[in-house]
Length: 499
Image 1 (cartoon, rainbow, N blue to C red):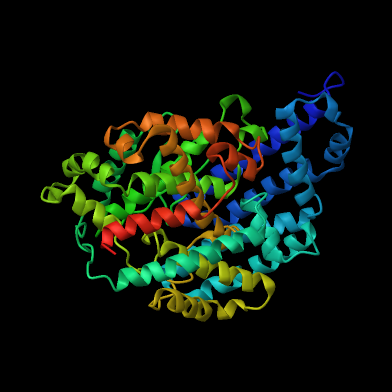
Image 2: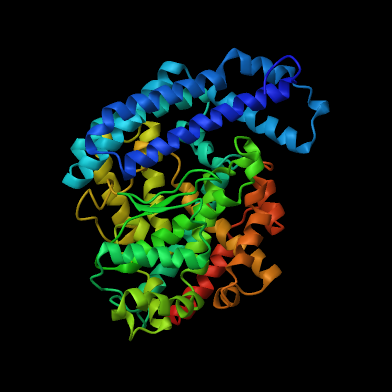
């Protein structure tokens, strides 16, 4: 939609829709790299990523965009169009000062870093990944300085995934959770009661687990016309409201690990699928940042899939695929997936409480790396020391320690969003229960359509129409607060462990 008869706003939106199409192509290439690309494809993929990022940067940060932003008649716009303009201006102001050469180098480095990470993780060799990590840290510092040379680099990068939530509020939430969770976890360690550890200690092949995950996702309402499930070294989701594919990974000794991971990613997919089709390419058809996205996955993983009601409903389905579960009760299953186990070094399979201590380890490591207070060579020792101080155990290998997550091949400042998402998920769950009644009852009745509709109405359909605070307040009736998560955690685990 270009030409002399169109307005500056229309030409600006057309430009942004082309940027969005390029970004979605990049996401598709990223999915392919992690799921189906042969190991030798890395060098070409790095150049492909760089070409896409360069084309995006040319459209986004060029003088034409600045001219169009200046020419838009804001008085002629309605509220939705003003929201679009606000989001375009925000992205422009963050990215316009980043030179194209840095964009290309950063893109190529990320792609190369992914290949290095795969090799390093398989070989349990941090030294293999260290050069790529060193380059990535340097380039992300450079990018942060271009965006805001007066700010702390880590603070600048936090705003990539949590727009409109400042670093001070994030720190305050982390402090509150540490104050609450550390003593709660200690009480659980000292409790007279323990929960079963080996309920799902079963040898289940990956093809059976895939069939099980597909059956459960089908029951939860996954739209297979716009989605698919695959495996990847690190589970992730993508892409759009038209193509909301997800991945998981399997543990042949515990079928619940891959199932809960698939449900987590399904939560992300529901957000993508709930975005309005007619706004594809516009900020109104894009998610409101990673923190809000994570609230959807944590909602489905924790407030649905870790409930007694879920296991009451799903165990018959699970037994069809895993007959060895015949003698397992729904309460035993529910207790097993809620067991607090701080000795587990892996974040994505961590229990609901100690999970956030995993996030603190990453948060502290990244902050020191970006500030220049921690050398890349010092990361494994710092990670292990911090992990041991918070969780009481020391990772036995770097593959189970600082190499376990893929994120340092793509970004920094992302990990706090997992905790922010959990906090918001509890707040959304409380608001949903005020409107619809207990989530346990909805799950027991299989009323997943009502859950989908509520989340779509309150969160998904708005895209980026509202800033983060306003979206949360409209959805729940109050600003983002850790109160609901703290109350939920106290009540749930006091009951489970009879504290």
